[in-house]
Length: 246
Ligand SMILES: NC(=O)C1=CN([C@@H]2O[C@H](COP(=O)(O)OP(=O)(O)OC[C@H]3O[C@@H](n4cnc5c(N)ncnc54)[C@H](OP(=O)(O)O)[C@@H]3O)[C@@H](O)[C@H]2O)C=CC1
Ligand SMILES: O=C(O)C1=N[C@H](C(=O)O)C[C@H](O)C1
Image (cartoon, rainbow, N blue to C red; front, side):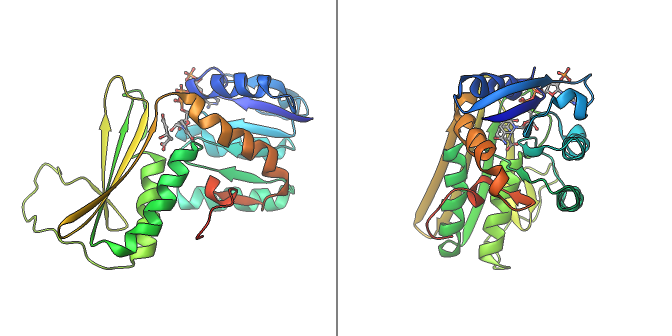
């Protein structure tokens, strides 16, 4: 039996994780923590794994507190900087516990990012559109940032055709490692992303839709079950799944 504490347990994602962990025969929910709760040896109640779905401003502190309390930590909270990830990596090494940070636990989103990276070298244009519910705090989404970085990594510095000279309102979107990213916030949506890859006369569209937060749960449970065997710091659920062509 793997014992689990959830941080952000009253939120949209945290409450869904609480339900999913409670329903799994091999997992036991031992603590539900939220905004006013300190993460400590006492409050995690001996949990093997702490799962964090809170807010970008709190995630790093929560992860460090989880490690100090003796937990492996599964992190879904977005908004990470490379410096924050490095500090968590070092803390994980020092603690002898492991951390996985995944910007998206939905299998369709992980595969969309993977397929985009496989396809990107064959197209001269690539742009990312992410579409989310309007309560989301961060833009662009962690998934869109990770997607853009993966595309940039495989394309190198190859320029994309774009004659735009005048865009005073920034309507061409943000640039992440040379890849344009567009963030939409629309009532009625949950979490969606489209990657558009173009060549003269052709377009490849890769789209992932999370219509319900249940979509993230198989990935979260997979991470909880695998984390004791992972490296001190893993970034991305693709590193845990056995994907072809990696
Ligand atoms: N990796 C993935 O697959 C996914 C990641 N996400 C990410 O997960 C995060 C949470 O999203 P979502 O559930 O929609 O957000 P919510 O706002 O619904 O939930 C966040 C929860 O965290 C609580 N909280 C705020 N600050 C702290 C703190 N310092 N310590 C502990 N708890 C705190 C909030 O309490 P209060 O409301 O009282 O402030 C709230 O209960 C976001 O970063 C989002 O981008 C979302 C979906 C999937
Ligand atoms: O805030 C959300 O809702 C989501 N956040 C994650 C992100 O920023 O990529 C994952 C998913 O898109 C839902």
